[in-house]
Length: 487
Ligand SMILES: NC(=O)c1ccc[n+]([C@@H]2O[C@H](COP(=O)([O-])OP(=O)(O)OC[C@H]3O[C@@H](n4cnc5c(N)ncnc54)[C@H](O)[C@@H]3O)[C@@H](O)[C@H]2O)c1
Image (cartoon, rainbow, N blue to C red; front, side):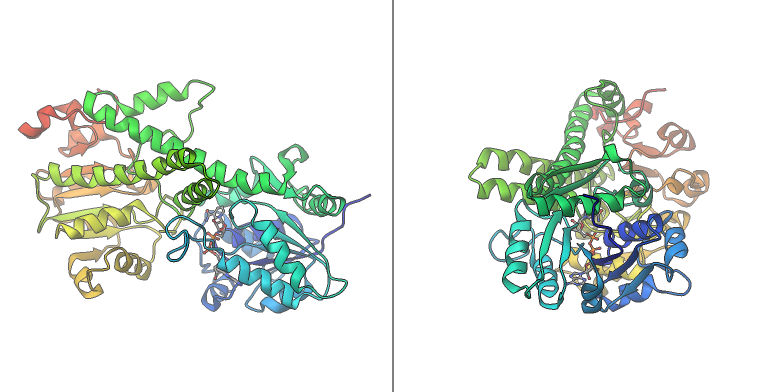
């Protein structure tokens, strides 16, 4: 039997996933009307803004929205209308870590998923395919089905699919255009398989069939958590090795390069850094930890928890390195932090390592100048207020200045900390920066981004690298550090 042809899709949640994903579906499937809804009026207004001042920065996204908006792509706050009209509904709402109650600090808060599901059940008058796009714990689809079936109207059936999103922020559009795979989980019943075929048919407009994987519902849900856990584990593994490199004089770039040459390991995600951030890795691993504990698998829980603990350790270690290197105190000193987003090519700051570092610097009573090419000022104040609950916004503003360029941020500072791997930081006028800084001028490269050799020639003391270019202070003679290849 030919799969059901979908002509109207609704996406609930116009965030970092729902927005780009469904905009790309609209682009690639001009015969399908795609509506993206959100409760957040400001977010929808931004998606609809006449000058395409979209709420999310993502390379290539504006171009996609320009091509489809008003044609077959619509943004709205009218969730009910969207539900009534759609044949297939993506639920792409946030699933943050629970802040209170049972499982606080670990379990996913499924309140938003539940509210969206209840709204679908209350409003729908025709049958729908409901697709979990949000990252959820294993067997969430079962709860969604129970809610939908208990509240549905006569002759209204709901088929639930799991279709986790694997895009990475910063490369979302490229990832959506050419995904490594599209994963669709369904019940292995005839109806479940039919619903799966209908969604697969949507993706087959641009994704090769051999990249559309169809599996059971629970495997699909767990695969998303597993994928993020394995990716984060690689980062924590290489960061753990970076600590050993510092203690021995081995070079983490060289070690990672050599290890990644093994085809069983591969070269990606082996970059030592100040630690991973973003809305997903930590949340999804903690979710896996909670799931393991709920299943009475304490050793499994402890194994995955260590990936998050290593990440925290790496951030702490970096902050301490800054303090130790600046002659054991940063009180009253000025530090420029380049990058506030959790990674390059996004304005997203959720769980950004930069926030943790700045919080540590503020607690040491340092002054911090921040520059990020994309993060808006109000977001920085919001994040710092949340990160420093013991400080008023007024006192934070006395210690923090938000700048319009890297050069401005570096003016009269003792040190520069590179917290995000924005490409433009490589091309900073480093000689000019050096002239404007206090001496000795330090650069702490939390992303192994800049050419340490070149900066050292200008006169900077670059961490990680100064070990290889001669010590700057007697205490450094003993410090073996992670760094780039020796000259
Ligand atoms: N950000 C990523 O890189 C990424 C990648 C893969 C998967 N995910 C997962 O996708 C999901 C969404 O992530 P995100 O980054 O897009 O989150 P987000 O916070 O950017 O967006 C979620 C949106 O859902 C809206 N919303 C919540 N409840 C609603 C409701 N009942 N009706 C209408 N709108 C509602 C919120 O207002 C918000 O705008 C999460 O489960 C996340 O784990 C995220």
